[in-house]
Length: 156
Image 1: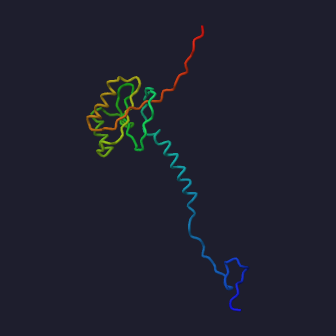
Image 2: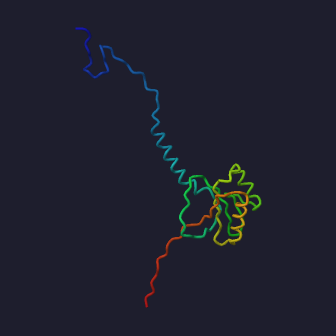
Image 3: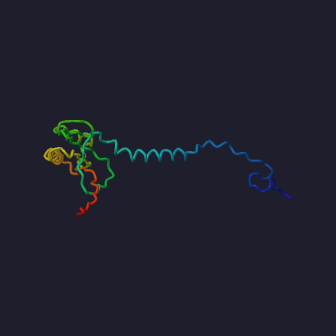
């Protein structure tokens, strides 16, 4: 007969000639992608914790958390009334130019104001008024979540 298929029908050999595959030059990137995704998740979780280094004792409220996906800027007022942008101390008249430089003059950037629970209310309002007068419209106050305290019944 004409041509006979040899090699046991495995499909690798045809008509008696063994075809040889060249060595594979591709790198398996799946483990690399897995490691990068794990690192991405770790950095996404820890980055917000590392953004502000000013020690502030935040007041407690029962308000819900603000939902947002953009990276906020933080303006903090510590217990002595000193003002910080992120973790850099500065005078109040320097805050607006600094925020404008950081945000590329974007008035829609989210700004979180963190006031110490022991700082004068007027100091926090002065910072918020300065930010509002400069055109920043997305200014929010930051507090910590107040935990419900169990009611203690008095027995007589």
